[in-house]
Length: 224
Image (cartoon, rainbow, N blue to C red; front, side, top):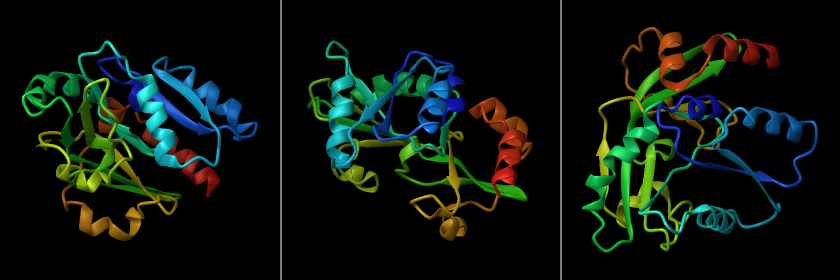
């Protein structure tokens, strides 16, 4: 996640990184050291035991600029990444999305093309995917005084609550597929992924997502 945020061509954004307030040392210090290199990231330590949806609502609405023309929001897990033009493309698409939300409530932008990366101790596999309403490529626009839709409804059913524009012209995200992923992508690999070759994977991941594949592979092999 963090390398892709540091790699953005448009650096005018904020990231609220939600963390439980009981995260112990040395992990808390390690996390603080990592985000220190990405000034857009704010660590937000919240009391553990809260309902996740309500904690997200308080966080997202609390960080919104009340003077902004519009608030654009999306969510990333720690094993997600976004393309280097994600923020820039989101900003550029706003004039089109503005015409879809005349009531001033919500509109959605779905960057539905991306990559799924499966990393093992002995190597990796990567495939392109075109999947509607996946969270790392899904942006919601709202007026500053309007409630956030993040975690309010299922991301797969966002279209029931607002107009959504889908775009599949370039790879805009990377999702991790591994045994610890709550979405269990390893068991849905063939259903979600296209059978297409991704060329020059290390250069692509480094340029577009800020990911050092060799370093990640070494660390994955180290932990087994």
